[in-house]
Length: 302
Length: 276
Ligand SMILES: Nc1ncnc2c1ncn2[C@@H]1O[C@H](COP(=O)(O)OP(=O)(O)O)[C@@H](O)[C@H]1O
Ligand SMILES: [Mg+2]
Image (cartoon, rainbow over all chains, first blue to last red; front, side, top):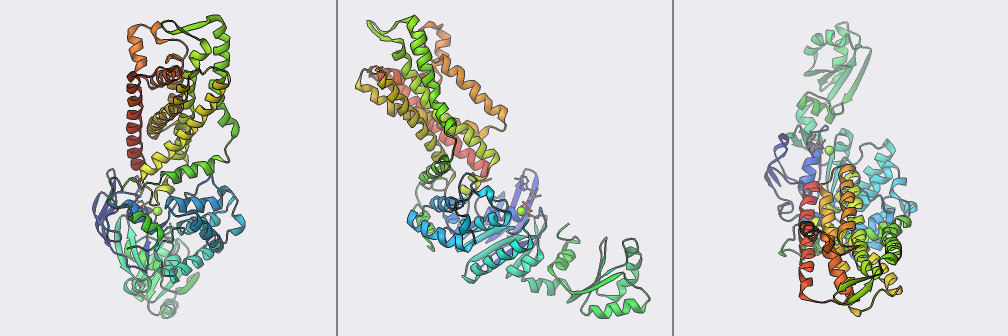
């Protein structure tokens, strides 16, 4: 879908010639820290931002030529909610349907269904400002669905939500996925990427670092298990040298040391054998966080 | 590939000129404005209309007592109130249009994200421009009709041609709304927005609303004749007095140009602001 896609804001290069393609029906994730260029990419796909150079086709069309037709296919959930503050919850859904040119009768029946989907039926006549963060997010998603899009684009759908609100949202997105809706999701949460995405593109500073399924990425860029040990922040660096030889790869973070190996228990035993005793130790399976650390030398959430 | 009603609606317009910025649905924007308007503050709505009414009473009847009749054509005299009423009608249309097209639009652009929401749908920037301007125009029209009813009730209308002042008021509203919105899209601060008000008041006071332009020196007359409100006042005054002639055509053209220029720049600027 995209080839050599580049976006500059003035002199600043936000996207540096990226290539990717998304298949129909899949759920595709853009994973990367703040400033990676995720929103920029999403907005170019959604034809609300022009590219500086490179090619992109969405459903076989150029977003700069066929903007309205492309947007008719999409349901867009932007990073920052842009609900209509002057209107009630149900009017927000209603007028959005009208923007797409849908008949009033069709919209009215759709509103009930979507309010139910978003668990907002009892808020139907409330003003938008009276909603909690999670409710606003659900309303934005419901609004994006008013035109029955086959492609739903979600820019950081759960950033800033509490865990419970996140899980409710994930559940709704799963349901859509089951119905065959193509999902494009950006996130800087690894658990979200792991849960929702079939395929992931890891981005950093306007470039693509890697692209694969979540498990594929872990297999490719990390070991099966990780041992996290802490010796206290001043000693971590001291002992790190000695630990290096015990594992396949080591990452020294300010507060802890990560030791990568397929059998992390064994590494822990060996640490004890050479007479070192970490304050805390934890054996866990590798995650996308480890992939990201490996690819960029930085953690995802600073 | 047609997968939903929304797609079918958008694809029906493929091949039409301008279909990347306009999808023929500015009605939806007007509908939105109406939904939002239902919860607006009525006192604010009433003020814009009452302003010219108050001028009519204070100047028309107060100052009018001192002045007596005015000669508009050789041998043709009308009361001072009847002289200023058409000017106030034009002003009414202008006020109605300007309020929605400037301050309301300014807040939406700077502090709200509604336009981003609209432009993420299959609407184009020109739908938004036309819709917002269309709503402002409607308000200008309502103010004009209300004012017309008042002056008709006071017996200040003497010819059926005066009814033509209503479509003229629509034209004037449209012109002011289009240019007002275009200017607003370039404004960055409240201070800059206040400039609009600072321009509007003198334009109202000096555009021949209260006395014929002939009392000014030639150069000043020429300057005022370049301002839009003078064209509005001249147009509506002629219509209300039943003076129909080809000399009205330039006024009409003036407003048509305002509409075209305003729409063009508004569309372009909305694209720059929200789609770049
Ligand atoms: N309108 C803009 N003008 C200038 N710089 C921008 C603009 N939008 C984004 N950027 C910059 O481009 C980079 C990528 O931004 P963005 O796509 O929002 O990243 P992400 O969504 O991954 O956090 C950031 O460094 C950001 O500061
Ligand atoms: Mg972002």
